[in-house]
Amino acid sequence: MSIVVCICAHHLLSDELAGLIQLAIFYADATKGAFDIALAGTFKSLSNLATLDDYRVQKKKLAPFASCAHLILEGNHLTFANEYTKIDLGGLVKEYAVDQSILILQSAGVSSALVNFGGDIAAIGKYEDSLWKIGIQDPENFDCNLMEVELNDTSLCTSGHSKRYVMFEDEKISHVIASKECSKHYSQVSIIAPTTVDAGVWSTALLSNSHIVLPEHIKVFAV
Image (cartoon, rainbow, N blue to C red; front, side, top):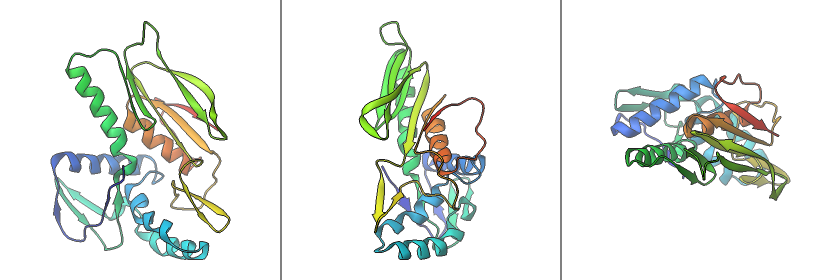
């Protein structure tokens, strides 16, 4: 799911959307910009360009505007500081939906469940008296798993370069775009965290910038 928004005027948001954007701004700060909904949104149009040179030139022009620093959120009121900054909630809403699904199930009295939305996974309780076991796919061989992990009232998300990308001439450009050129040390990052949003954000952030400092409450499986 991908939602791209560009608003140049003052705009009134619903409580839920305002909360999501506030959460995104929090994570942009926590990850030092490695995860940023304005980064994803502003650079999204780059995939439609014709050549690698066009891509590099346009990315350089847009880079100063690809930041949540250009969003002004006051309560439910959102203003964009310029006409170039856009936001893309695609890296957040799917994970948010998984977490909300778990809450709905728990409120209905369900104590054991697995929710899988396109590889963003949350599990509560157990499966036949055992912890939920999830395979992490090998990015070099989609028919094999690198490992198996166990979930116990936790979530698992994986971000990688192998499946979602565009080709410019002979160069592969991942859907995870860094604001600055930095080492792409990992080809795939899987993270276990208390919530799906937390796991999804930090897996994307670490894939974008392998040098960020991670919080102690998450588990990382990276290749």
